[in-house]
Every structure is written in C-alpha cells, then in structure tokens.
Amino acid sequence: MPAIVITGSAGGIGGGLAMAFYRQGFNVVVSDINQQALEERISLIAGDNADGRMHALTCDVTDKAQVQLLWDRAQAKYGRIDYWVNNAGLGGTQKTIADSDIDQLLSIVDVNIKGVIIGTHVAINSMAAQGGGKIYNMAGFGVDGFTRKTMVAYGTTKRAVGYFSNGVAKEIEGSGISIGWMNPGMVITPLVIAGAKKMPREEWNRAGRKMFNLFGETAENTGEKLMARMLKDDKNGTFIKLLPLPKMLGKLFLSLFRKRDMLSQYGV
Image 1 (tube, rainbow, N blue to C red):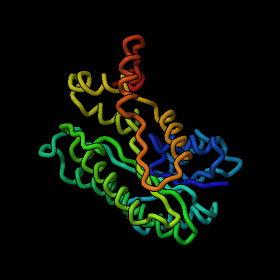
Image 2: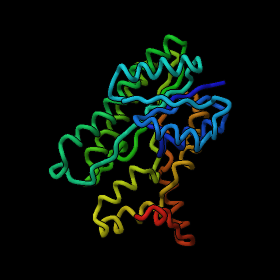
Image 3: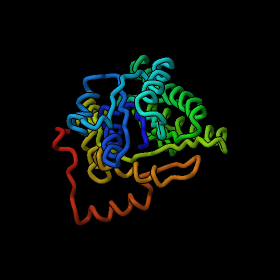
C-alpha cells in the first residue's frame, strides 16, 4: 500500500489532500505543529482509524532534525514513502512591508522557504536510499510573478518555491526521484479566513470577497483535484496549476448565470 507524508496537514489544503489520499487507499502521515489538531483531523477523516492507515506526527518544518525524524518515523510506520508534500506555510500579514512586524515577516520566510528547502533536502536524500519517490512543493499566490500590495512577503516566498523546485528538478533528473510544485488556486482555508478578518471590511468586500466568490474552492475539493493531477504525473519538474486562465474565464462566464456565496458561513 503506497504512503504519503504531508506537512502542514492539520487543516486547510494539507488536510484536504490528506482526506483525498486516504480515500484513495493510501497510508497517510499527517504532520503539523499542533498534536491535538492532527488528532482531530484523523478523527474527521478516518473515524477511529481502526485500519491504522493514518498516523499523526508533530514537526516544526524549520528544524532539520525534526524533519529528518518525521521521515524516519513515517518510514518506520509504513515502510517506503512514495510521496512527500512540503505543504506547511504561513499566510501574509495583510499589511504593507513597512507596516508589518519584522519578526512576523521573517517567520513567513522561515516556514515558506526554509521549510521547503529542508523538507526537500531530507526527502531527496532519504528517497535516494529507498530507491526513488515523488516530492511536491506547495506554491501559491506570487508563483507566476503577480504582485499585490500587502501580499509582498507571502508572494515572494511562493515565487521562490517555484524557482527552487524547478532548479532542483534539473539537479535530480534521471535519479529515480521527481519533484513538482503546485499552485492550488484560490482556496478557502483557515489562513484565508484569518487574513480576511484582519483586513478592513470595506477593502475585503471590494477585492477579496468578490474574487473568492468567483474563483474560490473548498480545501476538500482542491485536495481531490490536486491528488488526481499528482497520480497522473509521471514526469520530473511538473508545475500543477489548478486555476489557469481558461478556467478563470469559464468561471467568470458561469457567474453571469450562477451566483456563489462561499464565505458567509465563515463570517467574512
């Protein structure tokens, strides 16, 4: 039975991925910094987890020793690790660089870039020892170079994830290990909701709310779509983008006939 490790999977996109792969029959290791949140995620997905196909391991992705221990414990539990997803990330401050707390900005860089580099380093070397595997790094807003005020730090990190993943793909070509990166599109996650609540209501209603009602998806739907693309991917250096321009235009056209309210239930 194949196995997958997903960092930052107590909720959000990582949680959606965990649910999708569990339903697909995988052994799934969920990892985050909050043990209680991980246990709640397992209960939500697998109930009493009687078949043992889900396993929770806490990990700070900015700590090399903890990430290596995550791999070692996951491998001890399930044997070969077929997929490793560096999904853990922090959202933006919803403020300009000048108005943001510098420690918060550096935390975003630490988790979103340093965490991806450490996770990739551990996975490549460990997969080499087991004879192959697939790595995916979670990109997001900014990976295509699009910029927006108050999203500069976050977008910078996601742009870096794309560059890093593309470069590593060239380095490991022919090794039996592959790496890809994914842009999940506009996903309604706890990070998004928390960010929306920090923004002035007028600004959110003018920009964010409209966009998410047009293009937003739930984490569960996004997890299913990402999994389908990952399982079909047989190449190294693949960029998986769930919301390319043609799909955006299609959603815009459908909005003429169907109005969506994706956010009221969250109070934003």
